[in-house]
Image (tube, rainbow, N blue to C red):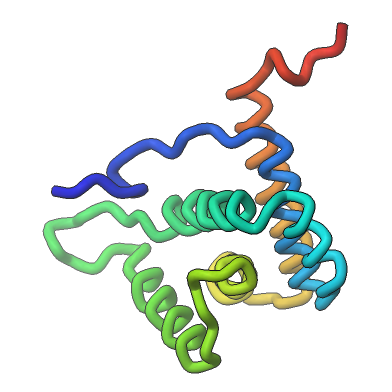
Length: 148
């Protein structure tokens, strides 16, 4: 079986990477293109692309990973259908999943459609996801964030 993000552990991300990725995501969610462009320019588009894909994996994989129950539907089986609907929605809107806005919008839409049914609290869910990512990054890189 080929290795992928489901079968291998994700490497820890630096806290600044989490901050940059979520600053970009929140800016797009708010429709603030100027801030999104500034974040992308400062972080570097290639680096931000890698960070966004990493964040997407950290958001999507824990939610969509359902235990196998001898091939029988389980309480989490709806996730595959919901994820399929999300991908179809993205494709119908012509979203390029390979670019910065495409990855960030996939995270936003996943949050809207799967993590919450109330579109008004998407910003709060994104803040909680960022806090969880930041906590993981700080635990993985503790020496870089202690005060002398």
